[in-house]
Structure formats: structure tokens, C-alpha cells
Image (cartoon, rainbow, N blue to C red; front, side, top):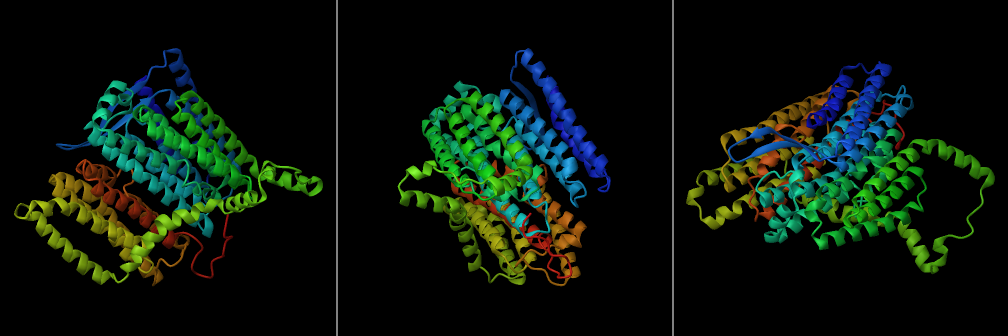
Length: 622
């Protein structure tokens, strides 16, 4: 039975590859190929789950597949199947099958028809990797694929301003959640001294033994998991991203933000429940988070003026209740609730255009205002205050901006004196000095060498913050992100000396992608004379090949699965000691902010309304 699990991983991959080679003009063949692939997957899922249930429904675990191995490090892919996987598999397969069927005619003659179906198949690969993941590394592969697909689907109408802007917002929140998952992976490596599998996590005796002597690190891992889950499932304070994600086509809103992707925070909590179930403080925190999210999201949903936003906040409120169910240990109720919420939101989003048309017509002739609502029983000042707060969505967007994005921009503005020439001279000079210190490490006082890794990692973090706030030169922003990786490699080398093979493996992917990306920027600058990051330029209109190459380079540099940089990032964290929380935070933050900055450069240069006036100006929103 274990080998059958590989079938559910390989089928979406095969379907994606087939969809890539089908010409974009052949809509019928393209949609048929995707429809058939998902249909086979759905049929296979039903047959396998039925067979699995009638044969004892035992937990299945496929032995690890080693992708990279050195003297002290192994990158393992592990697959796992239990009742949680079974529910997510059936729900995901059915809803993807339904949405692909719906999209065949809904998107007929749309310019991005092929792009949409390619992205849906790519999303399904990430979905399959995530639900079948047997360890954190495998789960993170699917997690990252879902993040990229989310960006591409929201920005599907890439010639319009709001879809592209909101795609960047959602991607940024996803990356914040990635910090939690990365740090949880790092801490778990030190707690277990191995790439712990979810199969072993079900061993309560093993978990209790490790947590008994490592209480702090256990709480830290649980908290990081909660941050990742909250960001992915739009819980407080990250709730405002979900309505913004509705700028994509209705089918992608249904499958992504109504049903499947938004429930992966729940999946992460369910999968790691055996780890934190004995940590009462964590369970109380999850209950409170879910409770406050449900109350606030319900209030916001009641005053929304668009049907998609209302559905989005209603879904957030239900997911908050599912968080509470998971924290209380009601696993079966949580799974049933997930399936019901996913089906309901998919249905609501798919029929929302027709429903709105019908309701407008009905309201025109038969509108009668409601005589009494629950809010009328409250004191008027309180009622009006809640109403205004709900209209402003409880200022969640402003909170995220003031706490995270504005400080980053302000820090970046402080170092606006950096030009390309100064950048090369100054950073290269400092790096040469740092490299000399590394080569003469034995001659330096121990106290200095102990602090150098964090200092060098901080320099790398400052570089990517500068890149995030860069408005003038895309080349400067791009080079700053590349240089960050060299600073990280040097910082980790002071901890434990990298083997030459490990250095080459980590830097090779960054260097090759960096060269490709920089060549693309130079060609674009030559073709367009001047390029900057002050506004969206929309150059994908006239430079589609350059846009595609730059996107490949960007996601490779940001550690996209399964590039050398993705495995290299995990390799870096394996060399960070368990007491170096500051170093781990600097490096994980630089990876996350660097990823946001890189996708921002791509979006500003290639997406949005075209900067040239002779191109037709599209609607601002979809």
C-alpha cells in the first residue's frame, strides 16, 4: 500500500508537465488534460481510501528518500498517510475536480487560459506534497509551492493594479508565516537531533522524554508552529489578507481562499498535535486566538459591501472555531468542520456572480429593511463604535503596516546613500576584511569569534532591508539580495566549518540564478532605456520571455523547492547552534524579507498597468 502513495504524488506532476507542452490556443485539449488528470487522481483517491478503511486503516509511512547527504547532514523526503491525510485528500481531489470542470467554460477565450490551468496543476502538486508530507522538510516543499501559486493566481489579471498589489500583500504575509515554520524546523532539529518524522511524533513516550528536559525549546517550537498556522489560515492579526486575495478569478478564489489553501493552518496544527497536546499554555493560546478571530471576523463580515469579502471573513470565523476544536482535542469534529466549511465556501464563491445578480433584481422590487438585529440590543455608543471598527476591518491592515512594513521601509531609507558603485566598493571591502578574519580565526579572541556570526548575519539582514525599500535601481536591490547569501555563508562558517562541497552546493544555485537574473535586468534596461521601482511597469506585455526567466531566477534565489538554494537554506540552519536564537532569527528574517523584496522587484518591473501610454489602460480591479 505504501507504493500507492507515490501514485498520488506523481500523477499531478505528470499532469503539470503535459499541460506545459500543450499550445495555449488549444483550449479544449489543455482543459481536457487537466480535467482528466484531476479526475484520475480523484477516482484513485476514492478507491484507495475505501480499500484502506476496509483493511484496518493503519498509518502508512514510506521510508525516507535522501536528496542530499554530507558528513553531518541529510535532506530527507518522507511521505505519510493517516485519517487526516485521507480527509484532506478526498476533499481536495473533489473540489479541484469541480473547479477545473467549472473553469473550462468560465475562462473560455481568456488571455491567461493556459497560465491558469498550469498554475492550478502546480498548486495541486504543492497540495499533494503538503498533505502527504511525513516530516517538516517535505511539508515545507508543498508549503512554498502553495505560496508561489497563490501569488500567481491573485495576480492572474496581471495588467491591472489591484490584483498585482494584493498578490504582493498576500505573498508577504505568507512569508511571515514561513519564518515560524523555518524556526520550528531549526529548533526541532536540535530537540530531536534528526529530521523528525510525523510518524515518530505519535510516540507519546518519546515526545514526553524530550520535552521534559527541554521545556523552553518545546514551547518555542509550538509557538512558531502557531504563527505559521495563523498566517496561513488568516487568523489574527493576519486576517486582512484573505479578502485581498479575492482579486483573482472566481475559480481560484474558490479553490484557494475559500476551501483548500486557507485550511492548511488547521492541517499544520492537526499534524503536530501530538507534539504540543501536553503544553496547556499553548492550547489556551490557540483557543483564545480562534475565539477572538471568530468574533472579530463575524463582525467584519456583517458590514461588508462585496459578496467575496463577506464570504472570506465568514470563512475566517469558521476556521477560528476549527482552531478551538483542534486545541480542545476534537480531531474528528475539526476534520468534519473543515470538509463542511470547504464545500460551503466553494459553492458560495462559484455561484456568487449569479446570486448577486438575482439579489440585486429582487432587492430592487421587494426590498424591506430589517426591523431588528442583535446589535440593536447594545448601547448605541457601543453599537456605533463596533460598526465603525468593523467597517475599517478593525484596522488590521494598518496594524500590520505600522508594526512590520513601515519600520522596514524607514530602516531602508536610512541607507539610501548606497549606489551601485558604493555598494560594490563598500560591501566588497568589508567582506574581504571579514573573510580575512575567518581565515585567521585561530588568532582572534574567542569572545570576538563567538559574536561574529550574528554580526555578519545582521549585515546581510540590513542589505535585504535596504533592497526591500529600494525605489530607484532594480539592479541595486537585486545585488543586495545576492550578497546577503554570501554573508550568511560566511557567518555560518564561523560556527562550524562548511565542507567545500556544502559551500559549492549552497552558493551554486544562488550564483547561477543571480547571473541569469542580472543579465535579464541588463537586457530589459537596454530595451527600455530606463527602469525603476517607483511604480508597476507592466513590461510583461512586450518582454514575456524576459519576465519568465526573471521569475525563475527570483524563485530560485528565494529558495524555491527543490533548487540547490532550498536545500542549502536547510543546510545552513543545520549549522546554527541551539543557543543561537539571535543568529537563527537574523538569517530566517533575511531569507523571508529577501524573498518578499525579490518578488516585489519582479512585480514592479513586469506586472501591473503598462508604463507606456499607447497600451490600453485596464480596469484598476478585477
